[in-house]
Amino acid sequence: MVAPSRLYANAGLPAKAICGRGTMLAPPNRFETSSQEAFDDGWPTGDDEPPAPRTTLLRDATRRIITRNDSPDLPFEQSANPYRGCEHGCIYCFARPSHAYLGFSAGLDFETKIICKPDAARLLEKELSRPGYKPAPLVLGSNTDPYQPLERSLAITRACLEMLEQFNNPVAIITKSAGILRDADILARMAAKGQARAHISLTTLDPHLSRLMEPRAASPARRLAAISGLAQAGIPVTVMTAPLIPGLNDAELETLLDASAKAGATHAAMGLLRLPHDVAELFSTWLETNLPERAGHILSLIRQSRGGQLNDPRFHQRFTGTGAIPEMLHQRFTRATRALGLDTKPPALDCAHFTPPGRAPATRQLDLF
Image 1: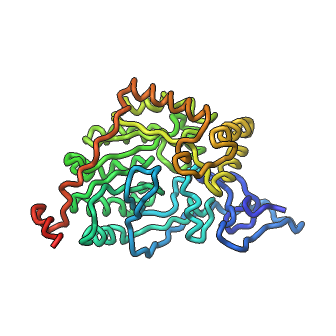
Image 2: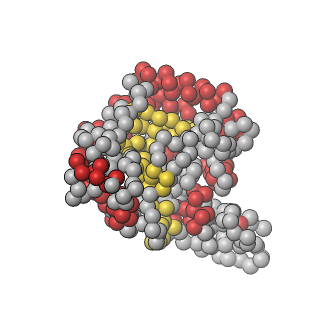
Image 3: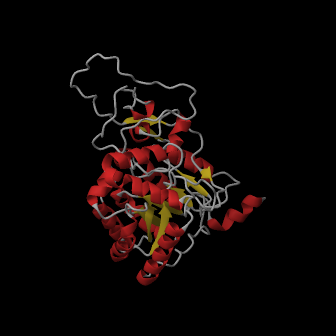
């Protein structure tokens, strides 16, 4: 008997590593009341392997693009995600379980069934134009990467940036892709007015480990090049050493920060690995498949950082963890960022000049009447 979480998506065949994909599992949707399960009926199936799953692009018919945030763990009020699902396939991605709300799996479906929002810029214009809209920085990529491979041809993120620039609405971008450099022209103009900054996620400098963990994301060298290119364009860059995974990439913390500072990053942030819902099984299986001799030790260290569990969803704990291991990581981070000049907070983004197109800034107060 083969458990349903160990099947190719929709193939009904035992899982094995898939080149270019973060996982070979398709765990059942946690909201569904039924699931399919494959079994060995004794008949030979031959040596043919199922074809590698291809990326399917689906259209999102949402009527709203801005998501409001009231979490005490997040330093922003609103965000937008041009895409749902992410072809980067990062095995550790905390956003994977969000695909369940669409009726899909957090495993292969998350990285092969990508939902795009082609009307994102138009929806953004509509929401920014509302009389009751209160200007605030908008985060692009809070859930899934706005510069995954499809953005090269669809340019939805760029269209959103063009709209934000028209309104003078500040933006912060979170990505691990060098594709952000394609929009350096817009970001540089906005940054010159204090309205833009970038956050680049850097998990390791080991290209082999990166390819295993983040199969379709930019290589470490390209991410450092992106930091350098953004900095040269005058765009403030924060390096995010996240997620830190005890026993896997945590030893690189100081090296990651040093390389980022040399590339031009001016600020830094860190975050501990999170394994919500299906991600715990996906990550555990990935470890057992790719690093079997270290899997048990790494999972033990994670549990020591999460109160004996693989995940702790509590506010004020989920990003930082508890116990000696997270505390030591925090101390190392503090010491390294201080030595490298990365320990200051980036300046607040400027919302003072927000103005709908065609309306003079001086007339904005008249909107109150």
